[in-house]
Structures are given as C-alpha cells and as structure tokens.
Length: 229
Image 1 (cartoon, rainbow, N blue to C red):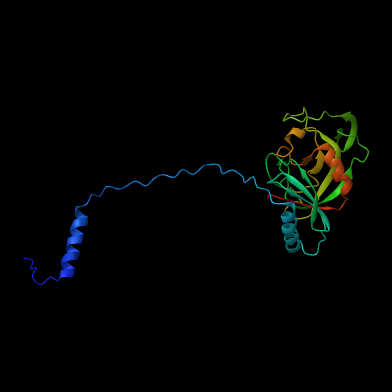
Image 2: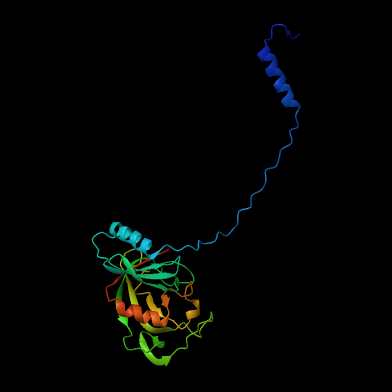
C-alpha cells in the first residue's frame, strides 16, 4: 500500500505532470518538407576586372614564387573569359569557349587543361581573316563565320594559333597529360555563335577579330593561367 501522507508538495506536482504527459497522444507530428533543387544555378555575378587582377596578383605571388607576371593571360572557365593583364591591371577582356567536357589534363580527354602555361609558338602572321589552318598550315581556304549557334561541318581552326605549353609537371606537362603534345591552342573559330559558353574539344576558342588583336598583344613565352573559377 502506497502511503501519500509523507509525500511533499513538489513530489506530488512531479507525479501529476508525469501522469498528464503519459495520457497525451503519442502521434508524431510531421515536419514540413523543404524541397532542395537538384541543380543549383551558377551565380551570374562576375567580379570586376580590378577585383580579378588584384586577386590573381596575390595568388600568383604565392603559388608561383620567383616567376615574373608583368604581362600574362588568365582564363576563367566558370565565366568563359580570357583576361590580358599587364602590371596588375586588366587591359583586355574577351569572351571565349573552353571545352564542352570541362576541365581535364589527360590525353584524349577533349577537356581544357588547368594550371600555368606559356605560349610556346605563335602561328598565322599572314593568315587572312577566318583562314583555315590544318596541322598549323594555311590551306588557302576561308571558313564562313557562323554568328548563330550552329555547328560548322568540321572543327576548324581559323585565323591565328597560340600553341600552349604546360609548365606544371604532373599536371599539364609530361606523359599522358602534356598540353603541348595534346595540341592545346588559343585559336579562332568560325562557330562564333557559341562563344561565351563551353563548346570546344579542349582548346580555347575566340572570335576571329579578337584573336588577331590578342595575337598582336602577346609574345611567345607569355604566361597563361587557366583555372576553373
């Protein structure tokens, strides 16, 4: 037999609270569902040229100590832009097309290699506007510029070539990952309607008028940094 006369007031209150909760329904209340989109859109905001140049100056000084970057190019795969930077100031900015399959350094990947490169060779001084080059030789033929998003009948290289050499062994230089041996170029394309979005097979495509301008502004040996961002 339970004796209640010795129970204190706090104990009785605790006992009553337990009894109240034990009588409540044990039904689980469903929490509202929050749907998370499967695809998160890439931000459309592009940093200013000044912000980009300032960030790169600090990045290059830390990543590649001892190398000179008075004049260099920077390729942003994310924004599909090529920047020409001189003395830490952006003097030119171009829309480009990198590889449709993304970034990658392996041979036969059809991807644009990342990391530090230099221009090993410049080819096409006397090639006319939209002149077709095959194996780096002008064929004498002229490609038709396609300003709409339409594929040419072939992956033509036109107007100018800047042939890139990787400068980071194990990343873009050496066996099975050598950018120079992969024939990675900056070059003109007749498919100008696709400029501004990934569309190439590994090279960096430019509009023909703009590739002529860039070609005249840079030299063999000019560094070019290619990053995802």
